[in-house]
Amino acid sequence: MKNKTFIGFNKPFLAGNELTYIQQAVSEKHISGNGKFTKLCQSFFEKRYGFKKCLLTTSCTDALEMAALLINIQQGDEVIIPSFTFVSTANAFVLRGAKIVFADSQSNNPNISAETIAPLINARTKAIVVVHYAGVACDMDPVMDLANQHKLWVIEDAAQAIDSYYKSRPLGSIGHLAAFSFHETKNIISGEGGMLVINDDRFFDRSEILWEKGTNRSAFFKGEVDKYGWVDVGSSFLPSEIIAAFLYAQLECLESIQAKRKAKWKQYFEKLTPLQEGANVKLPHTPTYASGNAHIFYLVCDSETQRDALIAFLKDLGIHAVFHYQVLHQAEFLGATQNNISLPHAEAFSKKLLRLPLYIELDPTEITFIVNSIRQFFTS
Ligand SMILES: *Cc1c(COP(=O)(O)O)cnc(C)c1O
Image (cartoon, rainbow, N blue to C red; front, side, top):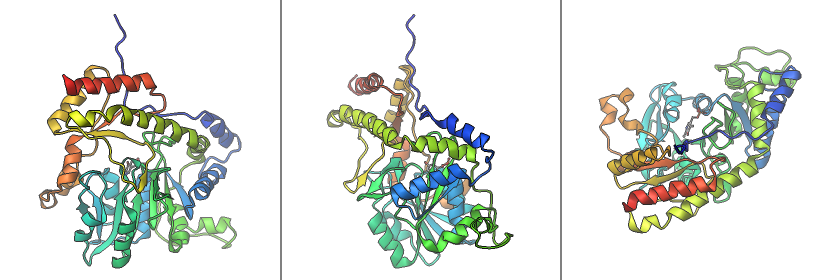
């Protein structure tokens, strides 16, 4: 019997030095947070992307929770976010008592835009959280203009967007604050992990306090105060050195990780482009202002029925393709009062979008097999 093909959706990539650096952290006996590897990672990001200040966190979810604390969200404040996103984009602000207001995606791209955000702004609006879906930039200039005009904070949920650019500016450097994820499904990983980027210097001091459980411990270690104590709210947001050591090994290989992912993304894109002519299926749209990081390769089918049939067809051939977010505005958690709005573009992406396997170990012959299988689905 022939071995059945199995191509999984994701395989976490190991750069090579992860265990060496973990071993180093362990033998140097600094394994709690904010040690050598944490500082190495933070300064790597600050130098490479010009982020003003970086703090590693235990997840992107935690970084978003820190952002909600920093901008001082109060009960009843409104926060505008996309409906087509992960729950953490909403939950971080819900935890502080915010009302979430959902913006629609664009027709050709899952991201929200100044046009879909503007009608939702009122006197209670406090912040806009944009998500750069699949690592493709939102159109940030009009969003920042809108925010400045209404004195709103802008937070970039850049969970998927490491090493992506908007008009040559790195994503995560544009909003007042930004949150990244190093979850094992992202491009650069540490198992669980994340980072808060602070671009507005008004938040510098307080961000360290929230990060260190509401104490001024960081200022104490820098010799700025002679003892440290409880000065604010806070939580345990910082990861251990073991996580930071793992992450640092990944950062050393960032260039090659990105180059390899981009080559695979490009192979899909070139080989699937002819399909757009005959079949009713769309490839990802990258606006001219955006330069992506090959985080996700997706297709947008003609209908939910077609999408689900394609997933089943590929599954039979041993290929694991998956859909993505359920729109948040229809979540059971919110209840009927918020469920009955209509966001047609977000709903369409939820029903029609399908993600293909994309990871470093996926080899070109496997991509060819996946592409041919998709062609076969649309021509049979
Ligand atoms: C992955 C992801 C998150 C959550 O990241 P964690 O590090 O797992 O907390 C949040 N938002 C978006 C858009 C994501 O893709």
